[in-house]
Image 1 (tube, protein in one colour):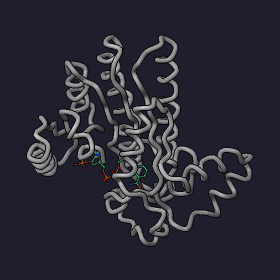
Image 2 (tube, rainbow, N blue to C red):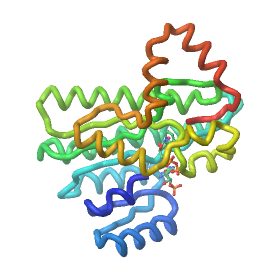
Image 3 (tube, helix red, strand yellow):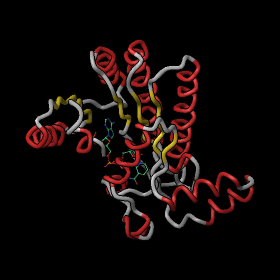
Image 4 (cartoon, rainbow, N blue to C red):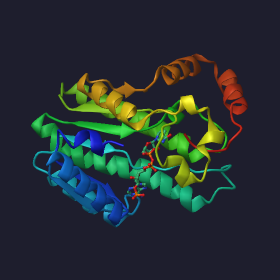
Length: 246
Ligand SMILES: NC(=O)c1ccc[n+]([C@@H]2O[C@H](COP(=O)([O-])OP(=O)(O)OC[C@H]3O[C@@H](n4cnc5c(N)ncnc54)[C@H](OP(=O)(O)O)[C@@H]3O)[C@@H](O)[C@H]2O)c1
């Protein structure tokens, strides 16, 4: 989501599993913006590969921004969906975020500069059947980001933390799950990727901890957060014709 927007301001280190896609994107960004774009092919849900990425991040001399964006969704009721895939989701959303935030902050805090964006989801606030691991890991991401924000505030640090909580966004996310976007929600509810990234970076510049792009999703989060639990659960159960993640 972020690389294209950041390439005209920053040198980048892109991390993902698919080497060919990384190489193509890096070449495109170098040609378009003239920035240094490095790549690291790694599965962040793998302990050994994650350790290598963490070591690289903690040793980057001018690290100024970490975006923990890698993530995926799944379909199905908790006990029917494969346990391996849900375990992998926890390792990626929780384990990798924890480790990479630790690596980045050990680098940034001493220099009193930089920021971290953790990409959560409105699923952190609005749960639905078929997303036990997804919603719970995204809720963890929210609480984790908030808690580090407090740690940083307690030492008057300039390092910024953000939990980005988008709703439905037009990316490959739902193709990967194998869900037809058109059957999931009205087209108008799908946010443009560029818009989500712009809102996030605008928020980061202002030191905003929680960013929920789009007025519909802001309204949804603020309403659902005010409901008593029994009513929220009734709304969440009723609003779910399709058992998949957001
Ligand atoms: N799209 C939405 O509607 C939506 C809504 C709310 C939140 N989000 C969140 O937004 C974030 C980005 O997702 P997206 O919508 O941009 O989906 P996407 O188009 O499927 O992109 C996911 C990215 O994560 C990388 N990735 C996945 N598993 C990985 C792993 N094990 N190790 C390293 N990289 C991995 C993928 O690259 P490789 O496959 O090459 O590794 C890809 O670059 C996710 O955290 C997602 O939960 C998405």
